[in-house]
Amino acid sequence: MRIRIVDAFTDRPFAGNPAGVLLLDSGAFPADSWMQRVAAEMNLSETAFAHRLTGAEDADWALRWFTPATEVRLCGHATLATAHVLRTTGAARGTIRFRTKEAGVLSATASGDGTITLDFPRAPLSPAPVPEGLAAALGAEPVTVLDTGPDLGDLLVEVADEGTVRGLAPDFAALARVSHRGVIATAAADPGGAYDFVSRGFFPGVGVDEDPVTGSAHTALAPFWSDRLGREALTGLQVSARTGSVATRLSGDRVLLTGSAVTVVDGELHAVP
Image 1: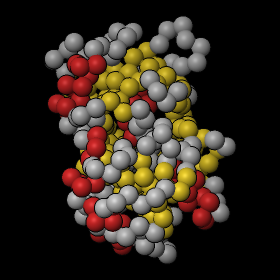
Image 2: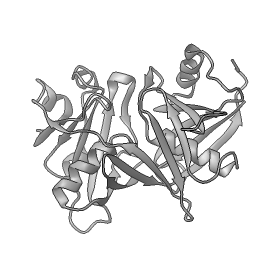
Image 3: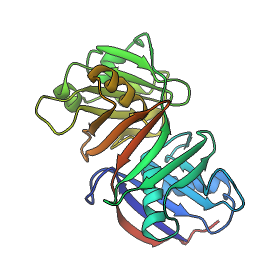
Image 4: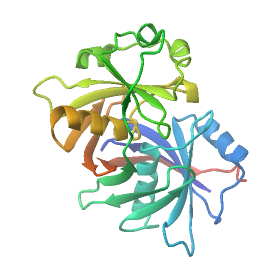
């Protein structure tokens, strides 16, 4: 069984967010326990598993994602990585529709320049009380705290400026006690850059202390910053050590996320189910 590692939301190797991708030979998923063990072995923020659907009117492929510790309901970079593998291997062309376990049908469309645009649900944002200990755990005082709704399950935390986001050194054990999937820290970009906002994503509760580039987080970041900046189309830079760029555009109750991807490993998995 072929297994690949794809760096997503970047156009160069060893940047962006690496995802494992397995295109399954059968028309069904193997046991959850096997997929979880593979994801733990890969030890990447997410590993994606996909199989072709036959006779389905709404979707072309079924798709699921696992961190080293648990299955997740929505993942952007591993969806981008899967679409990249399908496109570059010739397994799929045009718009690819993925049926997911909990996030509905998601689509991925490749452009002539090689970028891929994901069509994801827009996260609802609502004011949230500041959890006790959040500032100390994050290492910065929140300016704004928003809940991103049950489907995403994160706290969106605005801090003072880009330098604050870049300098965060969270206490991950303390951050894991915050009652959400994770914390998305963000600020407006410093003037003069090629991007509009910056972010970092911390998810110790699901086994990922810091996610290098979080596509799903941009379903909340896009409406937040579009409202602030008055523009539907923006560019976000996730300023982890690897960094990655996500172009965002609002489309009603959906968010379009555009990025590039690069395959860095193409190998054989011998521990088949």
